[in-house]
Length: 396
Image (cartoon, rainbow, N blue to C red; front, top):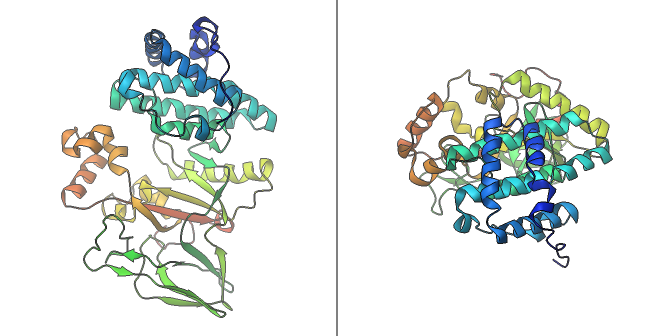
């Protein structure tokens, strides 16, 4: 990085460290007054650590005054927790993100984006501040969420009701979606050679193949696509099928522009609220980002693990969300344990934390049986948004 931060102005001359600034913008996130008071108390403790206050100023100046990218200012985790402890590390990062709020507001004004969209996303800060309190005892942020919040300030993410959406993404999946030219039926083929479990999940959680594993095949020629079919519930079948190009059209390929969905931790995943968010997203992109020619909504999440259909009750909101799209494979082991059992559960095992919900009890049984969680993904094609129930599954 060529640019340097401006000289340190002195603690008393940094607006974002003033209580009035912290209270005003923290209240906009929906954070409770008692937690804002706790953040101010921790901030006062941080002010006694002069080198770290100077570092906080430097990061703020480069990111939010000179508008340098995060990847050049803080390219990797500085491990501040080792020097400050979890509580002051948490408030350090919280204050850093909060200090970018005026820049966030200015960028919304420049693009004439609605204040309601900005304010919807602001509430994400309270969600993660509370997440930090549950795991470390005090409100704040861990390093892992800093790139996420930078995407808020850079306007690469918007909030529209229950769901959030990236303003652009190239389809990262290896699945191709097809529509029958005559009937409109949708099918999917896995367009790569990868190892799968006997059940039809990506076999990528261990280096060694699992028992009964197999490798998918893929081929495209002048007249047809040939590959292993993906069922709408996210499993891949071993026997390849052929889709004639004269009868089928490829409507979503890897690399195509999509609207990426993020599911924030902000309450029940009610189907009506989710569909409302999807409609609002379509309207937002049509009005404010008309040159982004997206082809589908896309979402990858621990909530889209195909195995959840065998764990959760049939009427769960999570399964309803799964049925709203065409589920497809996505690589990696899901962070389900961290999401549901917190840092201690992920680090020390789910047996070390109290089980307070039926979801936790169900997941604990699943893990005790020796299973592991997979990531999954789902697609809702742009032309299918108005169809209710969604056209991909008979049980929708």
